[in-house]
Image (cartoon, rainbow over all chains, first blue to last red; front, side):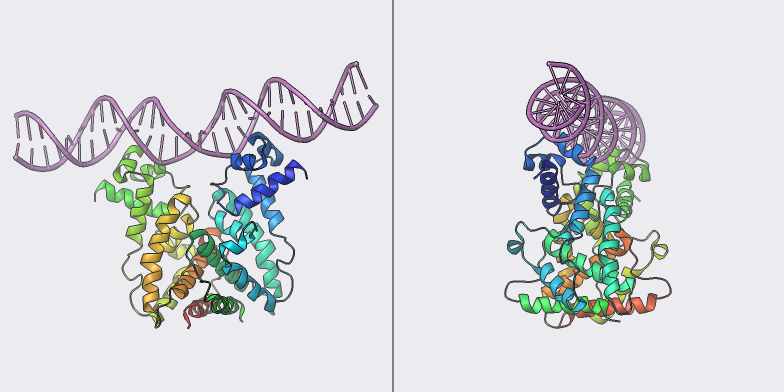
Length: 177
Length: 177
DNA sequence: TGAAAATGTCAACAGCTGTTGACTCAGGTC
DNA sequence: GACCTGAGTCAACAGCTGTTGACATTTTCA
């Protein structure tokens, strides 16, 4: 595996754990064991590095495959998953949620979310409605943000199944015509 | 009106337009027409200034007054309001949404949201459920974020009434038992 | 009045962090 | 061997921004 790939991998993990501003190139350099200058030069700039991370992570296998009926419970489960079951994994929702307010990252995220999430979801609707798909995405982001970034729990271990059902209902309400 | 109040007012407006990191003390100084040092000293630190803004804005008149049945349409309307109808106004949701990912602001926001929003909403529920109230808050934040920070529209002028109805349904689904 | 406290200014510091230029070194190619 | 290219290191720069100390000015009040 090339060093460049190691850098991308380390950056992806970092960006899913902290915001664009919090994420220092020197942290990645330490993770990989190289100099900061190399991290910078490998992608040209921090901004372009973030763009690469976003690109690689917004098209994962099975992200938006299959049916709407599968998508909703899948997302509900994912978004309520607790920290222990997410160790080491990378969640695109979290990367987006963490850096969405950063001026440098905002436009990149805007485009990625629109093209790689909202539009595909919209296309799955019987009457393709971008407002509905955007509402759906908004709620998903809000939940992910609250749960993983702010740290206010939306679910406890005991009530997990009922909580997932409720989130499914909320998400379904976004897409109902 | 004392200069300190002018500073607080300018800061409130600024924080509702950009994130904690983006908001520079020098901007406020220019707004008010004083030196940066004064802005800093008036509140002790940028962080304490933000805390004051948060405190002053999270207890506005009529924020959470009245019935649950009123709260839902009120929030639906507020969260879909377009830019022109919000000129000069300050929306607590936006202040929170814009800075929620900032490490310095995160804890302050966490406490404020929990104490001044989630708990009061939870108390209004027939069976006070904090998970439900948190889900409600999460969706609200997500929608506000998408609409006002990211800039992806959830509604257009022509479809406004129907869009508000849909958001009401989504919010109601969060609180249904 | 006169002292002291508050209000405010100015300039400079300090720390961080992305970025860049100069250099080294290994490996492949002619 | 000579040359060149790409990977990598090192040190330093540059710009920003919260913060602070020293000083000037106004207000307060005994």
